[in-house]
Image (cartoon, rainbow, N blue to C red; front, side, top):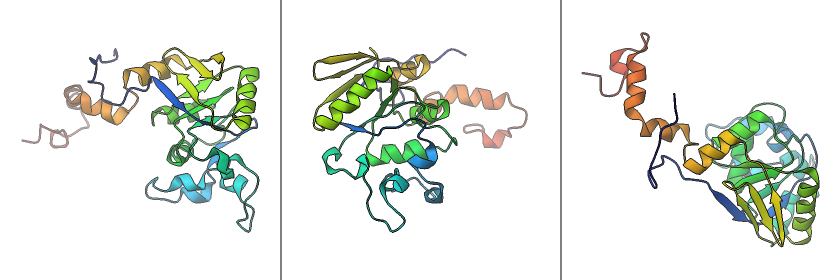
Length: 218
C-alpha cells in the first residue's frame, strides 16, 4: 500500500523538519535501555513523570547521593539535544527508554549509531535519531562540554547538523526522515486521518464483528 498524501497543514501529526536547542553529551558506547531507564521504574500505568528517572543508576548511588553525570549537571539544564556515541539504546526493546528521555526534555538524539528498535521507538514519539561519523560526534560532544549554551541546529530534511561554524553531514534513515518530514510518524493519528481505509480493512477481516467496526454498528 502506498503512503497517503497530505497537503500542507493537513498532516495527521506535527511535521518534524528541524530541531534546534542546546546539547547534553552522554559519552560511552553500548549504553543500553536498562541504563537509560532501570526496569524497576517501569511499573507505571502511564509514562507521566518517567523523565525524572532517566539514567537514574548512573546519576545516583545506593544512598541516593548524586554522582558525576551530565543529567545532574546544572550547566545542561534545559538542553534538548542528546549527543551520544555508538550503539545507543541497545538491549531490551522497552519503549520506556525514549519515553523517559522525551519527558526529560529531549527532542532529538544525535550519535554514531542506534539500536534499531530504540530508533523505531523514538520515531513513534516524533524524536529524530540522527547519525554522524565518530570524529564529528566526538567533536560535537567536546564543543557542547566547552559551550553548554551553544545552539545546535538539526535539519532533518537536509540531514545536517550545524553548530558554531561547523556543518556536519548527518544521516537520518530514509523511512524515518520521510515520516518525520511528512508528519506521518504518529501511527494513531495516521489511522485517525484514514478512518475510511481502516474501516474498509476491518470489514474485510472475517474475525472482526460488524458491531466492533465504528459506523457499522447498526
